[in-house]
Image (cartoon, rainbow, N blue to C red; front, side):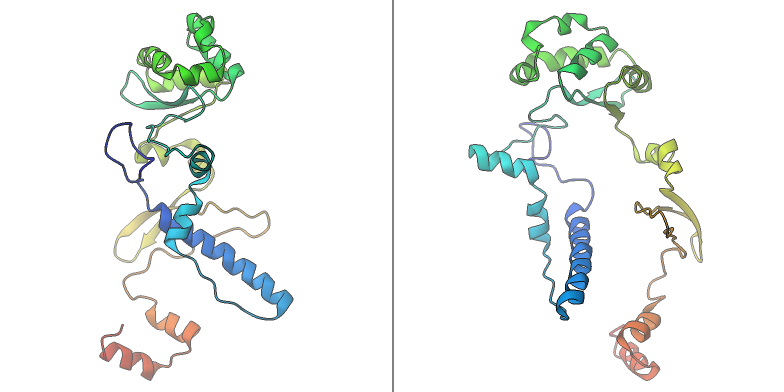
Length: 248
């Protein structure tokens, strides 16, 4: 949280449970690796995954910056610490567009696309290092430019010009995006109590074995008996006793 949010504002939590998700992914990787190791050494092993370790591991270049400089990285909103301009800009319709000018060639393409040749010809902003040093002089000028048109218009202009960019979507926009739908990331299923429900699709695609989600989210306790019997070898009387004791 110390690196998330706007400068000189309180820390901001990330909008989804990143630590939980990352830890689960690491656990999956570890299980698969342990299974392959068991094939080689004939012995299983205990896997130790912690939320803390997993969260620390994804500090990546922010940690690298601290190691190299000894200085704590500060929150920078949507901007990039070493590339300018590389951030979200507010557009005329109130929505935001991420513009990712990753190098000097992109800078040239962007300036021409947004009809800002005066910035392209300004020696203060010629190279990325210059733009990083003069971020506070450059960004307000770009903010005015991007406020002059709606997001979708800018998106087309920049995309046609070869400038990396992308809209900052609301949730409703994510699940109407043609590419998201084409990739099967929105599913509809019938649920016993909720009727038709929408679910996020599986991001993993295989060339030979198609991933399928066959059942909707279960009701509370719907699969308890099945899990206890299939995976823990409980019998009916043992399950009944657990239920009578309030354990399940």
